Length: 235
Image (cartoon, rainbow, N blue to C red; front, side):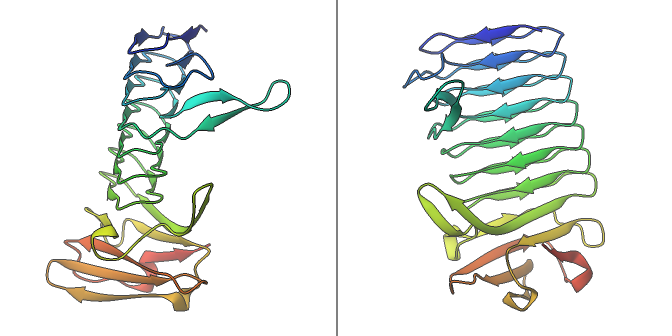
């Protein structure tokens, strides 16, 4: 295992065939550049850093975060600082965890059963092959599960700068581009069943959700011709 750290600026970092820890920027350095990081083999942990970064995790069960790591208070503490760069994060083969940041990010799971977390921004999440879980987060997100039994998660988001539904109205709505009825699932967290409804329209199904604070949100399921209670789960 290697610990690999970039410098301030735009770096090109390459891991090994082992499980590496890769930091795109030195901890606490703001701002950084647009890094290019190749994880290669092994179960890597990658903090891409600040700026618009590109990460290819490679083989292995990788954990990839678009943000930088910032020292926390006290000894040994650290936290993720919000990064508004537009990152491109690709897990490659393996069961990966991929987390975006504050910008309009592209998250690609690749082969394997992946967890994709868009966080802030108008993100694109692409699960790829495998049984994936996609969480768009705040912003007008576009979600594509790919092959496999995928779960699309929506609900309330509590973040330092926002609290409310992670799906908006109109141009701010989320979109699921390949929902497969009877195979994929919609999962609503912190939302009661009576607060969810849907109607069939030309070209898809519009899902309406109401938060406990009265806020409204929409999710567009493109190309879907119907929806039943069996397609939805609540937590």
